[in-house]
Picture 1 (cartoon, rainbow, N blue to C red):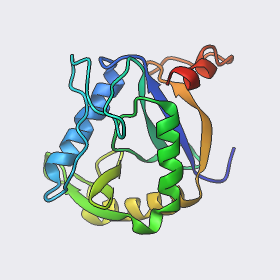
Picture 2 (cartoon, rainbow, N blue to C red):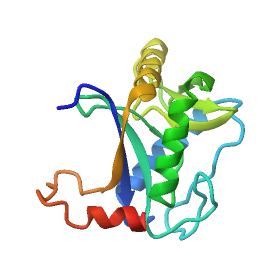
Picture 3 (cartoon, rainbow, N blue to C red):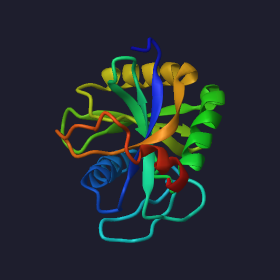
Length: 184
């Protein structure tokens, strides 16, 4: 097991993927709880074939996000945008690692009492979010500080992972995952 944080890239096979829809729903709650956050990048809606990616405005059949993981595989943060290509997502993470000092954290109040999250911005553009709700604002801020520290030195994986159904096992042989780098 690695002793450092890592950034992994997770590909979705369609805009209707339930995991993508869950991510979109959580991100929407984060955005609605954030006051004054400018230039939010729109994301595709359920049932829609087109939306906006972090950079090029296209939405493909294959799309994905990146996730920042601790050495024990616990999620520390995730991208605030859906990317239409693996190359774009990876290049964005590498650029973000160089600019951690320019990042600003904004606290977010969740949809119900006692839920707090965070959004990290660069020049008022959301680039990373919490992956879950926290019970207090201070716990949320501490988690964000930890995520920013981990991002600075995280190992960035060289290829994407296909998302699998919750509870399903990945095959030992990474069938098809290598081809994802070319498609997504």
